[in-house]
Length: 342
Image (cartoon, rainbow, N blue to C red; front, top):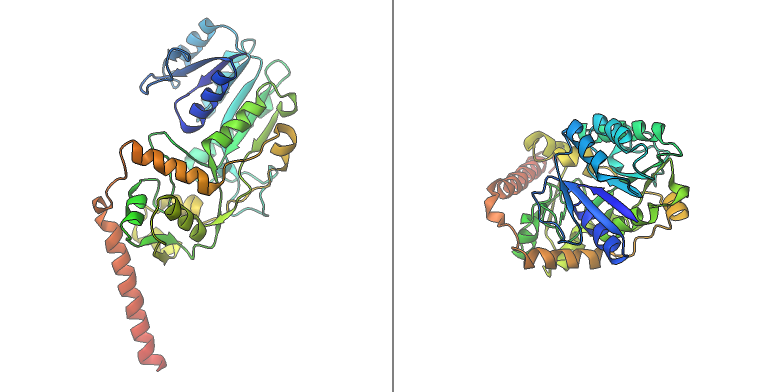
């Protein structure tokens, strides 16, 4: 098959590409050419996805595709553009979206594809709009499939494996764990989180290619391994060959007040339960997450170490200052109550 991947350099795209090439497909990337490709076996059409007119010209010159995978469709105008550009030039359009389109907190758990859309940030709102445009326009001549990704991690990417944590994805977390420094955990660490290795998410895309059951539909494809944040951090520490982590639990509303910019991810996402019912993806795509979080994280951290190591946690003095302030405040409250309550 002749397959175009718009993007092609991210965690999921890299995994998809490797598998498609191994299967003998003809794969082409479209991106700005700023990240090294995968060699002559995967040519790159260099261009700017945001320049819609020029993108259209380039794609019209490129010929017909058996499948187009758009991994970087972020804006509604881009969704309208790919529908116009690939009508009559592609047999299928598969677009990467996000589980962040769903309402938070959800109306029920585990979350199904029927959950209402109520995104909490601009990125997710745009993704939701893209989905609506694409699915409403899906036809027999240009069928559309949407795949919603949860948190994706794995070797590679500008995020250095994308080991997400309370304050983002910097590898300073791994440095703290190795150095036996305490780590901040939002809330009580008892809400559930789901992380998917890039190879498993790539499998969902591979299973969707040419799959008529998936035409005109949207799916999330996530592991059934639901972890509390406390357990998540324990497994990350184990994968990093670090001791049992010392966790400092701080309420989300406190984090939002004292470090609002750094706590944005927690407020908009991490504080909510992220667990999903994958019945639809299993039924129609044959999806199954095969890589356990423990094994996948061990591979990821080994890659991070082999390609530059961890970022120095000493570069974040605010982190230790926040822990000290929180502990001091808690001691002050305890002292006050001892004076009142005997």
